[in-house]
Image 1 (cartoon, rainbow, N blue to C red):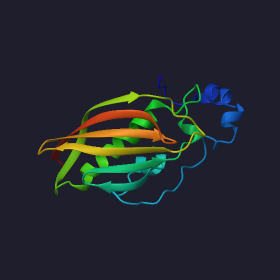
Image 2: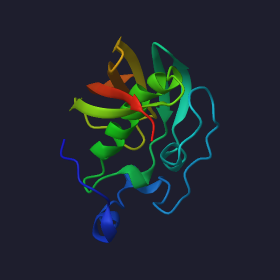
Image 3: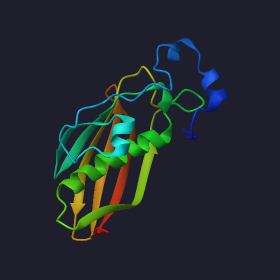
Image 4: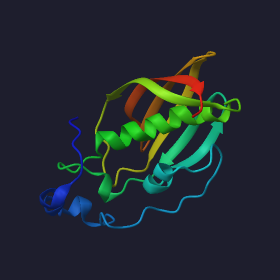
Length: 164
């Protein structure tokens, strides 16, 4: 799947087929979402509408309803949206276990897009599992599904370091 940024005016006009006609227009505000478990909602979490269903030291589960403004020019969910969802789902369990004065930053990721995610095919659900949590590095595995079908799978590596 080729991921491209934004719909643009031309791309938005091209997405007027019946399969996207019932979608929210790109100018629609994101759903409010409830805070749920996990870390306090970040601006990006509120902007995209992530809902944390489960979050513990071993992993997390995050839901994201698909909106029309998540689509790329060919009407598929843009790869950056899937990557952002997977990254958030992977890092939430690491944030939960942080010591005072410590933060975490992503240092590497590999995400394979297995099938296209589409508007109207169900919400996206990401599930992460912490594979290793060391003193300096952590590695998490994430699977993203839509309608019970796997659409992406990845491995994320994070560095623990002093905040500030």
